[in-house]
Image (cartoon, rainbow, N blue to C red; front, side):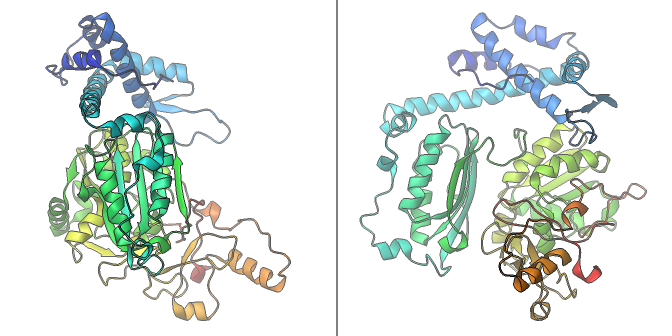
Length: 522
């Protein structure tokens, strides 16, 4: 595959990009656009152009990759222009000969994105002369030197609400270039420990994604440190931090790590078109006012996992029956016809998954427009708690869900009574969540499926036999990327389990999500 190694950025890169500022990206009349571009470059900038072209080429090929090749083959397959390619050489040759114009436009786009990064980098370097903080950050100095002064606060103040849920949980993400993610990881670990925060922080060269909980004083100090840090202050603002009632008790521990991506998907985010909560509210209102929503040119797309949308979602949405966000590209590939010539309004919890999802959907080139809800459901509910989002907001911590309204949109998996409070499956080796009401719990229905229920009984009868594999019979029942059923060009009814698929429950703490059949139907 083409290399994705970033070149050094400097004055020559900016000069290279500025030469493209007046190009008409819609002009496809060039016989060989790549050659025309390269002819304008001097030797010092050709290397930067080469990097941009390789990146554009790699991204284009990535969008043509088939998510699940036939089981008897382990190699990757690609599909483009109604042709199937089974080896890398043939897909590369096809793209190079048949899609030169697209690569040309994407190359120019990458160059323009790089110049923004280059400009920001130069601004930070200029600021470094007046502020030694950034210089010390990049030279891997002691992380303890970059912690907030808490000497004026008592331990009780920092721990107030620490264990009773009267504190606060922060949710945020930031896409920005981080040259030394390992240093950021060490700093974030020390910072969170210093403030007695728990939660998860994901760091990559492309940015940071965090959910942390602690006292209100601790989260306030954390936000102040992040906003003042030269690495993030030009990208983050106070509104980027979503807050909710909670605390350190919402997470079993603190986990900070370095990953390839801050949200796993395998494709870089591109330019995003946002709709602020007020604008998104009006769009949904207009969509719901239409007499026949199924024949509308608009799709309201929930890009979260099925167990999240099960207990809360926007009215009239299409909620994919997927159990991991990393399956979202496969879902899109399976249902491309569904999105053809549609305006897509996407939403997720805080916005970060939409950054990736909308980039992938846009790259397919079938949609009329793609927009995402800025700040996610979290920000929308802050402005419109009684708006068009009904039910609870699922969160990945010990609270399981946040309540902004009194609507209950899900039901007990056993008796069908209205119920939306998840509990862990009663079998210790299973990490799935199950919706079971108090009445059914009282009858002993506390597992995610019949297999787990029986497994729990055998454990109770034979305490010594405490080791079981996670072998829920429901694991194999759920498709990785279900195909929506279209009838005469209409959108599928939504939300809810797809025909032939029973409901199931998720698992937490990054364990595989395992599906389960509705116990009432077993």
